[in-house]
Structures are given as C-alpha cells and as structure tokens.
Length: 148
Image 1 (cartoon, one colour):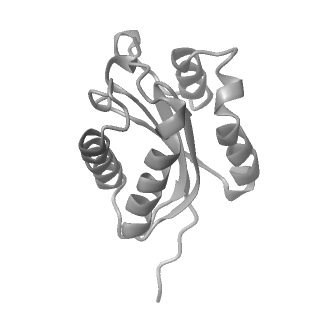
Image 2 (cartoon, rainbow, N blue to C red):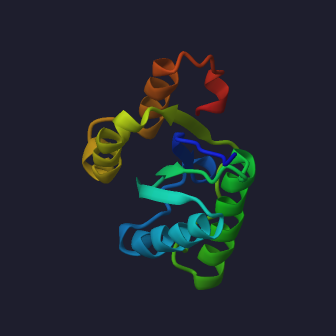
C-alpha cells in the first residue's frame, strides 16, 4: 500500500522582534530561495508572500517530512542566505516560534488569494491582529506575552 495525504498547511512566522526588515525590493529573492528549500524537502509550495515583518507559506508536506523539521530547515537556511547575500541589511533572524494551520483542499484558492494580497491586507490589519484572528478562528488558546 502507498501513502496518500492531502494536508494543506498555512505556515506563518515573523522576523525576530517583528522588525520591519524584509524590504520589498528583495523579497522575491527570498521567496525564490524558500521555494527551493521546500522543493528539496520533496514538498509542494502553492504560494509564498509576506510583508516587512512576516511571511505566509501555503504548502503540502511530503509524508516523510516532519512539520517542525520543515520549518527549521526553511528558517535556518534562509537566515544564512539573507546574511551571506546581505539582501536585508536590518534582518537579525526569524522569531523562535511559528504558526501552522491545516485546511481542507477546498480552501486552497481562497488561501492563495489571501496570501497574494498580503500587502493590501496589511494596510488595515497589523500582523499581531491578523495572527490573533487566525488563532481565534482555530480556537487556539494563546498567551498574549508571546504575541507582542
């Protein structure tokens, strides 16, 4: 018997201390790099985007890949790439934690649109408010001190 999965993840994480260091002109380079990291983990990237202080990744993980390892690989390798190539001079690292939320495959198109429109979306909602809203939608209890 083969292994079949259909688990759609929206992964969200921010820069260390929510620093607004991901300047728009170089984000494309970062996103392309992360796409390669995802591909090297035998996983599929549907969409990636973000703003100055955080990114969203919509992906399907290969069944042999653990979520925590997947995110660790993205964060560690992209941090090294950013620092080596100096694409974000004010970047000091990624936050320690992350959010990972699962969705039905039926939500894929709406999630892709949501992620594509991050710049527009964050004109009216801060990252912290967005993150709280998503945590609330998933009925996840959280401690406010970790969100500030």
